[in-house]
Image (cartoon, rainbow, N blue to C red; front, side, top):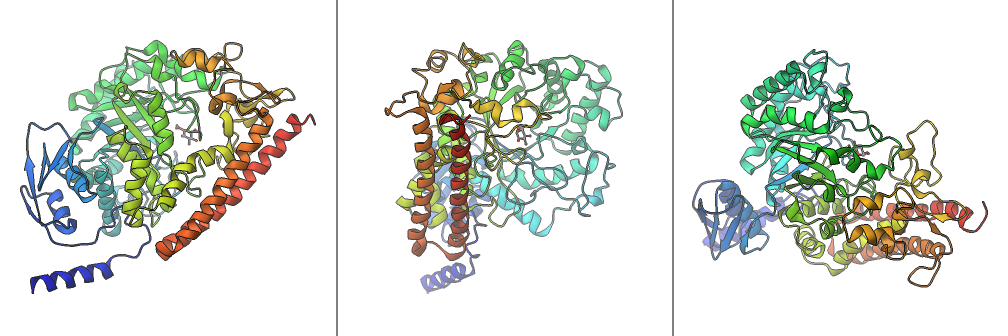
Length: 628
Ligand code: GCU
């Protein structure tokens, strides 16, 4: 009798399960209501009771366990606290056993969300955190809002945030920065801080702390002070009072993320102070509460204007090494330029050895086809960890690709990048393949070898059809999507112009960054310094990043550089043609809506890949074949 009841229950839950529209992410569990769970009553217990299809689970708290670690042995999950049990529960649900502990204590998403609900470089709809109830656009001149004008977190919106928290907890993400690094000072006004408090309350049970990006000039914009000079006593006092206000509302608030003196943002440099002086002033404000400052090194075009852009971060920060407070972490993008499909690692990781550092990876595909192209990013991050030892970092940040779209990320396969970020943040030694397999199994129902192959080849395909052999930043102005190799605007900073980066001329192509050029290679530690500096030893995938190379140069396959460039573009397009075929063949195994939506995107990607090839080769040909 009991068995029949259970069968009926399972059947009902099967049919009542939401349609396959991607909204359930990789957590496509149906309720089985089978397991008896003993131990502390917590979310882990609820999740297992609902979804685990074993008979029983014991949850055990053991204070001797490491923070966030879990052990799954037989029927028992052991962890230090409820968050650890939750990580263990999700691990059990995806079939893991044994002991596991995260590489870093800080595993943080960075949302570039604006207070009006728009998202900088977001391609999956509006912000899940912010929207004005009046729909009114907020800009710098809008007066501080009343509480009633900030969207209340009720109903579906609240439900969405719970699902967001759950998805993050399932992969071990334990922090989130709620607003854009290009931060509005209004973020720190009372109505918004109330909202932050409510968001924090929703995320807290899932082990997720909230952080905020702050605008360095907030004391002026919000506090009416005449300066934001970090050495001014009133300024420091303003930040101390603000920190106190925040921690009164949110006692476990994580801290601040700061973009200063970069791309027009205010910073300590406006007062001839160093980054360390700016960061330390903020660090002192949050220190009494255990808060941290994540200070970004993404700077160019200010103090070292005119220098090769990829060198500027090191030039600007190296003098500050060892001068930061112990609760400041320098946060740097994986590459020295800006989230390109392929970059060498950023040499700042070699140069700030007395400063705690975090890497910033980009999950949203700003320069990788946005949410229109299928590009699995784990290989980029794995490549980075091959150069920068994870043990040298104290944490990891990922620029989120999450929005209000039904499937969260715009493209069903972009969900894999959110998933992979979390898994690598937990264990950077997992391979791209292992992670993709896990994700495919959970997201598409079983392991599909063809889908796996497509995902694993997708990043290299993108490099090939966009910018092979170390080419970079030849995107159209502003939107960073299509190609514009002839892009040059006299009224723009040179560092935004494609022609500055590829330097194509009648002799050859590429940016000379060896000792005979900008000498960017000198910022690297050995062995990479020498390896990259010498044209003969420079790996071909970085060739045109580091060298200006003659069109007729003989490459390792015996063909000329110009022939190689064409081969790469052709290969990139052929790969996408193959992805389209793979997806056609997969149709019988995939549910309709997700199949159709992905198919539309793949066909679009193929058009784009062909466009990239045509535009770039037509342009480069005019030099390579001596027509200029
Ligand atoms: C890139 C991106 C900007 C962003 C900036 C940053 O330049 O295009 O939108 O603000 O990086 O990371 O600060």
